[in-house]
Image (cartoon, rainbow, N blue to C red):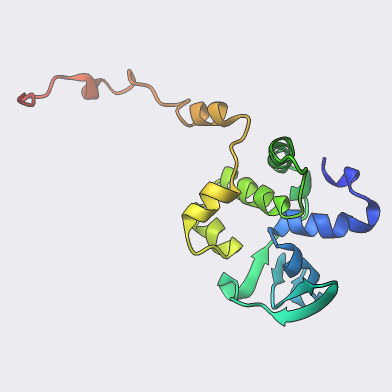
Length: 172
């Protein structure tokens, strides 16, 4: 959904960012020896920093959790959650879509897919889960349907013993 609209020479970079949640500098600092396609991980060991038009590479300031590895799933950049997150950001950001918005997409996708927020926060390098929830995740259009689905098999009438009066009702 997203990649067909990206110029060909940038598709690998955009796909990587959407599939890993990496920042621009983290993507630019990658070398092939940091990519393990068999394990589906990327190690962030250095970042690229641009100052006054000059790009330099620096060691990654704070190692990512789990040995500095970020998992990725190559097909996620076409998932509907990613598309929704990007659409949300594009609609609400007056300046349009930014590269960093792919990181928001990644966080939204993981949380919406049921990955615990504390794990998502660690993958993104956030010390506080509130940073992940408040800044990086966005509601999906189907949030009400998903919430209702949780209770689809729940019935108040299926357990008759729960409806019986208690022996000693609470005092007021």
